[in-house]
Length: 493
Ligand SMILES: [Fe+2]
Image 1: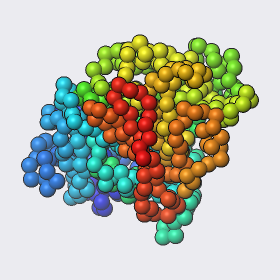
Image 2: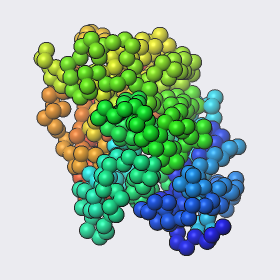
Image 3: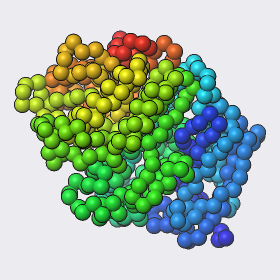
Image 4: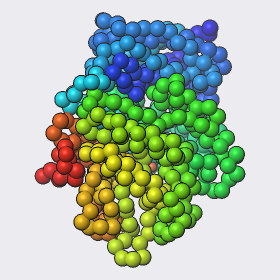
């Protein structure tokens, strides 16, 4: 095996998908992350890892050695088992003479326990070229069980030499980033760029991540085998295979999620004792193509077709079965796009977003009916995509003002996408007037902290005054609670 001349741990470390007895540890060897192959020859390298009870690595609990192979772009995914439930651990890697920075992770609580409290950080939509990842710096400092990422971890779009609105003056990004990602090499390089961000690395090192994806991990508004430009499906599926492969390589995901060609099993369920069940949806791979050619359109027979699906039949059945079997107080559904109805205006000429659940109303209705049938009292839907914080009441029937509220939806704004933003946006003021169940929105960048206990859920919507320069302080734009057994958001003063 060749020596590694310079530090290969440039992209940091990560952990994810906590179980009561196991977590996944991740790193990648890339001494020159902005070059294809990361500056390593196309051969295998041994990577040692260790996991300790303390941040000084005095009491090791597990250790081992794995191979970083060129086929996986020298990424490693270590599934450590036999751990104690509900506690933090510290981990690090070694390669040749180099030691990685340490990471901290946390196992899930015992399966049959009722933990007193759970705290999740929510994040989505991090266009590198629109601003700094300051939200992750603040998330890194928060006391959390895990970060739940709701998609658009990266964007396929070109990043210019000064990183767009980051406006770098102290470095020049290479031209490999200045084109839309299409090939496996392109997507791998794009993850290297995003993961070289120090704030994102800090968040990964501080907390386990639980990720799902939206569209931009592959291509804007793709649906199953269809891209937005009408490419032949077999051509787009080759691109999807490249994007899925790079996603799996670069996320702290288990081996069982490793993609096969253009297919990757991503939807999954995590338990946090009996306090919370977290169901993560894949809302891209199995969905029907958007109705009426996508975009904001008038709903009609094409969008209302009951055969249309957001989840595919197997995933839908899996979710409904999982809700029926749930023993959790809180059922949290993590998925990428807006679930509740959202009309752009109050009069009869309204349009809806065909890419969100409004374009798949029969699919949404099957989930709401299933949640009702399962007598799911405390359903909280999480989403992202729109680059705006929102709190929405999910009504059983959005057309009936007297229809009961049956769940809450929390949409997290973007980490950086759409630049600095503003508290109020004219478009969203109109939407709020047209959709009374849209209880709150804020158009700045930021993140959400979701805090769950026996009595209530609490959501704190955190915002940043700017992201086009680094180092913004964080403030809280609004907080809501949901009392267990009484669906509906209550604003906190
Ligand atoms: Fe986005």
